[in-house]
Image (cartoon, rainbow, N blue to C red; front, side, top):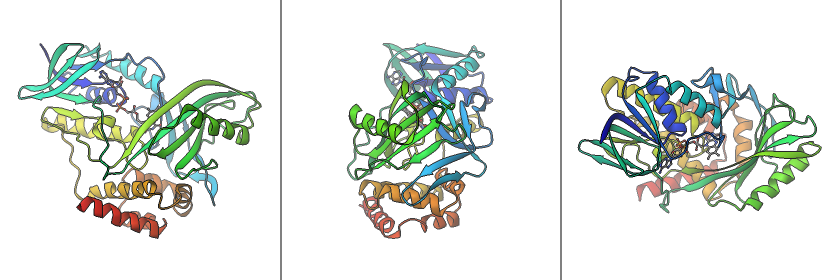
Length: 383
Ligand SMILES: Cc1cc2nc3c(=O)[nH]c(=O)nc-3n(C[C@H](O)[C@H](O)[C@H](O)COP(=O)(O)OP(=O)(O)OC[C@H]3O[C@@H](n4cnc5c(N)ncnc54)[C@H](O)[C@@H]3O)c2cc1C
């Protein structure tokens, strides 16, 4: 049985990012096996996120914008996001870029195979893929399927369907993506559209819902079509690509380190921000920490200070408000962006704010609904 220093189970966003960070560290000569059932040669998703300055994947950023538009209930306008930029990275560009970088390292091996089992043993992490056994000092697993079904926790889904459309008329302002447009029926949930322009005639238009269950194709497509007809002066359009996705929005505890030689990463490791569904940037941040620890101490374990766990409490409170429908989501997001500097909101969601700044943001939201949610969350945690 072949033994490696590290096995990366799943070469998607988290797995490839981890491999890339390893090549940028003192661990660059370690033997690494990357296993994935797919070759990853399709543009299967696009990642959007906000970022200050230039990030690791700057050379392949597909589009970036210095401001974003917002359409709420009692406030609409361009959000000043300070020195953040809203960025878009296409999956295919990411996969190709990282694969090309990794190809320079003969110690990194790729295998297209379906993983049947990931297991810890006293000798190391153990993987079976297409009936072949492999061992490593550490297995980094992004293939583990989270269950997220404990009724006492908040288990919402962020699900969305989007079209890249090609319009007859030059109807998109390339400087102005729409991050959230609530001018769609809420139906008791949180539902919005975003519009990310590639050029004057091409944009990704996506219908997003936060609730408990995915919809039928028809239920995504009707509001998408209505929105395009009502608000975008396309003069007719063609659908060039379709994107569909489901992201967990959950505060159910997940295990990043289920055992000594297995580390879960990406969605499988619970790296998704529960209250927003954003996963890309958080994964980059956590993986950078993992590689730093591994290089410095030989252990990939990350530590979160007790005080920093407060962000998990804020996530649970917002999930509780959404889940219990304590306050209309479109009104809440409108107040959030109207009463706070949008750049500060981004900083808060990135968990980079201090406690005083957080109190200020929290005092800007509907206190009754959020206080009830706080008590409900505390009760659930205590019980
Ligand atoms: C359509 C879509 C759009 C998204 N957009 C955003 C966004 O804009 N911003 C953001 O922050 N987040 C976004 N997300 C959420 C998140 O960033 C992505 O899901 C991201 O790809 C998660 O990375 P990952 O490595 O955990 O999972 P993946 O990227 O899905 O990687 C897992 C890999 O494991 C492989 N695999 C799974 N099971 C097996 C098996 N048994 N054997 C072998 N290989 C296996 C898969 O083929 C895959 O390559 C989006 C998600 C989706 C689905």
